Length: 333
Ligand code: AHN
Ligand code: ZN
Image (cartoon, rainbow, N blue to C red; front, side):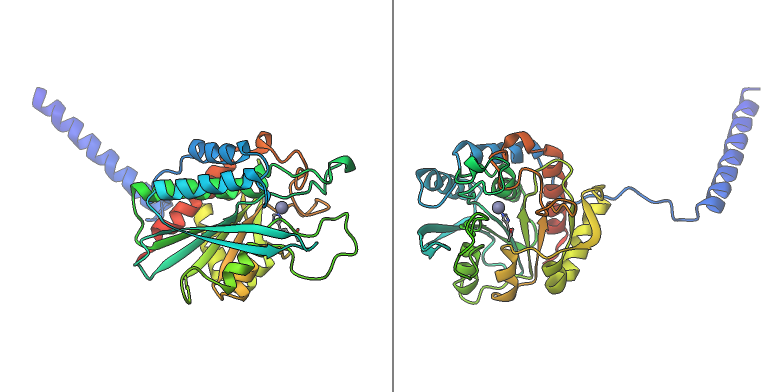
């Protein structure tokens, strides 16, 4: 009696299994989509947020100020702490109005002996003018640049921390460029013509820290911390590095961040990737929050006194940081 029950059970289970499998095969033949298996370590958005907060706590990071020096020292110390080989470029750059800027590019290299390299960069200075503020009394006020500046650097510091715990197969260079945001203010209308944005990256592109420096490709982060950020195929990135755009955007989609990374084109932006593409000839892209319907193309607090920690969203830092880690850890040597 007992045995026949067992046999009956086995027989019905087997039948159920056959039916299930047969039906399953009919409806979904071998294409049951498996969830994407991430191979990068977890990107800690709380930690990245704290790195953004720390920079902002120094105050505006405008060249020729004590806050700028102090924050620069902090960034050097963090890259050292995470085991990078750190090099600094200290140079005097000339601004749109003739001001001599004591500027400093900060470079952290991981596995410098590896000749397959990826370059990651962001600007660490903040703008001396809130020239897009609603109140013109604020036009001369330096901005905190929580999103415009500190967010990209914060994500890259967290990438550095992840690398310190588990090395990817490729060598990584992280560059924090200075004097990106000292461009001619909107309220000046008789400025000398010239390339007054991106002064630190222009300098580095002409004077790389390593003779004839090359990387497989580069990724710039700019304004990667606001909620509801939207990243599009930026024109210059598409022109010089369309394959990199596709690699990064498809990785973001696989990780479930498609609402941030939108696979349509949008306008061209003057940013640090331009000299790196055009002068250093490294194909690189700009991950930058773009708002097509905004008058100036950017988030509402852009170049205002309200670009502070209130607008920083950990979910956005996570989407960008995890995507970046996944791209790096997928690279084979
Ligand atoms: C211009 O507004 C010309 N370019 C934007 C570059 C930028 C400013 N990135 C951050 N702040
Ligand atoms: Zn700016």
